[in-house]
Length: 390
Image 1: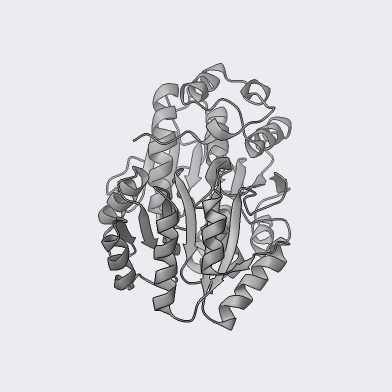
Image 2: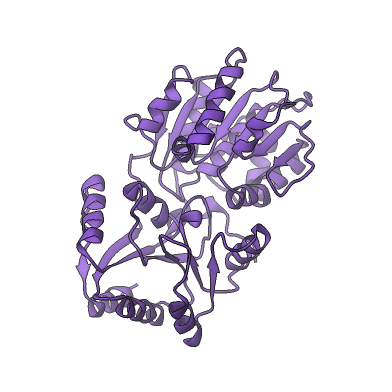
């Protein structure tokens, strides 16, 4: 099953011709049914066109089209007559790398005659002599990479790299090593604003760092958030089963804080006919990718996962996120990333938070305060009436 193009559900007043001067690139966009730019795409490309070489943070909610923004930016930067490395795309994990490869880079590179290397642990013998290098931070440990022709560095989910001490040190070394090279850096994040520690860390290495955003909101307007209080995990499991009795065919993420060990929930859902799979680091990379591809192709309905799937994974048909456990580390940003797995690209979505104690209630209050929202506390019977309306 092919994935629904991101921009096919965005209705904007913008045209690609306003911000993309390359007719071949515009043709590729229309061929992929990207009819119009989303707001972040228009804002970012307009900024780049009017501020040549200036580095910038692009901040927008999950599902708003940030990935296509940097895909367009890199192809506008590449000199097809120069076969040297010109663009680095830095991604945080294999899932996002595979998604970027399969749904964007492979197609555009083939159509526009641009070469690309994918440097990840699963690629044992990469050819680094390509125009685009799509990679993990492990690239910074490689000694024979020639950066002298580098024009553009793209860092997706850029806020997460700041939290990884080993990666931070590698990136700091990279910035120092390449400080004599004139290249532009584009950083993408749903949560990194000019007041954040991550933004200020990047400013230590990137001069005149700009900031482009949409309306500043990080929670999707189309997604509704609710909170249900329960007494124990048995009741928690029953609430989840009741929810799936109400939502027909919608795919859903159930987030846990630790590796999945709730075999009873999986068993109960399977018994009710709701096909489920578990995604966690106990499986090999090949097994995890197989599960994710099957989920994307709508071969099963419910994925039980940890926060390894909270960032960057696009499943257009996903309608619901259930927080079996409320996030306990970097709570606000993690919650924002989790809720971004449903209601994507302007579609309706639900986030159901199931809490058992005061500590989890405090997390809900912090999320409300930081986003200036109110998350209704509802009963099991009330969630039935709410969801039935939709």
